[in-house]
Amino acid sequence: MMNRYILLFLVSISLCFSGCEEDPVYTNPVVDVCLLPNGFIKWNDNIGSYCATTAFADEAITMTVNGISANGPTITFDLTDYATGTHPITESINSIYYTNALGFAFTSSNSNPGTLNITYYSPSNHQIKGNFNCIVYDPSGLNAPVNLSGSFSMYYTF
Image 1: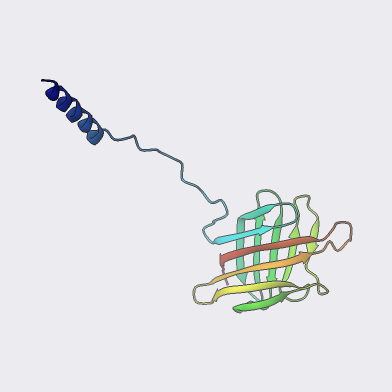
Image 2: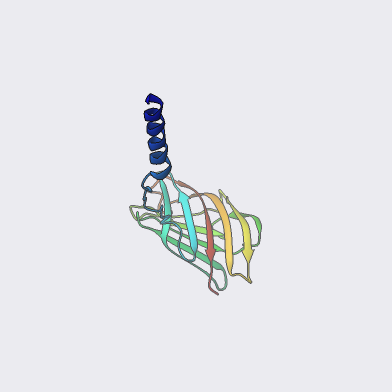
């Protein structure tokens, strides 16, 4: 008689475990605010990490890539040499213009070139990808230089 109760107990527990499923855990999907319909621009400076929440790229005479972050900083690339490969960033070639969160303007320099690495450029797909590392300077000399590094992947208009 005792064996029947044990058997009945084991059967009821196994039915519960086989038929009882945990409620699925519903989570909000992670949204990457840096990923825009036309690509992304992400960068670091001396203070923090940023990404463009508004961005565009356009190839006219040169390739212009611009990003504005929600935190205030903006970054603009005026790329004159953007074939796949490694290129210098200076004031006159592949220039970077940067505005920090306080609104101070900075620019790349001929005396201390940075590095632009174009990893993908496709005129047929209208897309450019790359990464960069550069020190930008306040032309007025009021602010300390800013070290910028980051990456981008943008579809561009022409």
